[in-house]
Length: 535
Image (cartoon, rainbow, N blue to C red):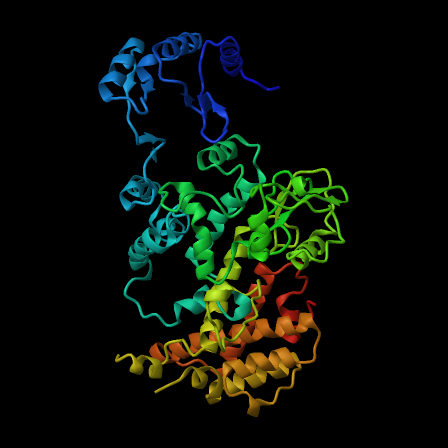
């Protein structure tokens, strides 16, 4: 069965009663040992006989006792020290350091994350620290407390003291909503925490899930129950994620759907297995009559028969009901509600309602939360073409919102030219645009193009094929980007002629297409004749 020699030896000792494991509360599993890459944890009852038997086992594998540690959970330090001396081990207390990660510490405290942050900071270069590090270290923190404070401190060297031209909500918004698609870190954290909840509910047979079920007594509790309200552990934080979802306009049942097959693991009254409202809330009067509040679906539905077990009533398994029965309408409604349910062989499981295949995806939850929280009213959507460099796409995205630094924008910030004048209205830009429209064979009403948004709308409304529209959008992006470069060059360096500017723009766009595009078969001379020859 793939069992290692050490695991087999320990198993034989357990069979003959040589070692005593610990029993996880709430009918959880009996845990004996945990094997890691370079470490092994042995867990057992705190007794001298158990300790000696464990020493006999690990001595067979030539373990260095002076490198081992003994933990006495619930025992005094003096008692632990006395027992550790029998093995020649050292005493260790919680929390302890395992691969530079604190085990047994409250990870909701900032101080317990400092060793991890220090390690990341020392291993990564500066640019990686600024770009990657804030996105990958706070999956188990309370998003509303620790994460927000630390992120603001990490954001200072990243953003610096430069002018913020675009609102942060627009940067976080999805590209389809007119944003940059950076996404919110808080929404991503919620999605990652919910992924552990999903795994806990769908992988109940794994060891870690059985341990969590035992500690938090989940075996006979509703789906949305995870721990006590005053818990402080990691799984208590995960259990509180439903409150975070409600703050963003989502419920836990808006994300997960319970699929009942055999019905043995689904509570009939407490779980929302038919819709988003459980039967306890839907039929409170009948719930009060139920003798077994936490009965399963299989206890009430067997084949084509519905069986009730109420306190003082004895009813037939199906209609009709006595006409003088006071709760008759409620029973009739409940019976009709569940009459079409048919149980099959299989394990009850949960499907993700926001994905097409039913599997959980943290990014899907993040997108829904961002769409609900981030408002981008009136935002201009941009064609995100892979051939065009990202800095050019971001420039056009900013220019469409008049968020580039011409003179008038700088004057409003205390430091008269507008973005529309530089890129659309000035005679130099108008002549270049006319030359490019003639080169492309496209006729656009220049009188209707007063800003960048009008130009992008005109491209969308052009009657060519989708590939040609995409190519035309790429040409316009290159034209706008180079017009901005020419504006700065003319302002600070030297004049540039109309012919030089036109040829420079065409050459730049051709290099984008050649080095960033796929299956480009035209050469530069053919490109200068017609931009659509490569299609």
